[in-house]
Length: 109
Image (cartoon, rainbow, N blue to C red):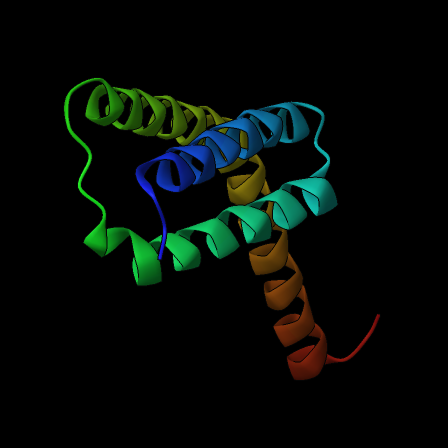
């Protein structure tokens, strides 16, 4: 069973990872971003199974809220950085698909 301090330690670790995710996205280091995202997911899974029995109050609760707000802000930063890249990738994939359909229909020139 997790203690209050264990829960806060996991949230703090997640906060550090999301901060690193912002850096990775800023550097277009997609492999590192994915690896960090997987580490965050592992922490989330741990909290889902263990945090329910832990009740934080007062300063500890405020710390948790602060960490969650920081993680949400980091998530927004990452999304803001990757959305243009994802749109460009989607456009490229769509263009390649259209090109493939034309070649299939009319043959290579």
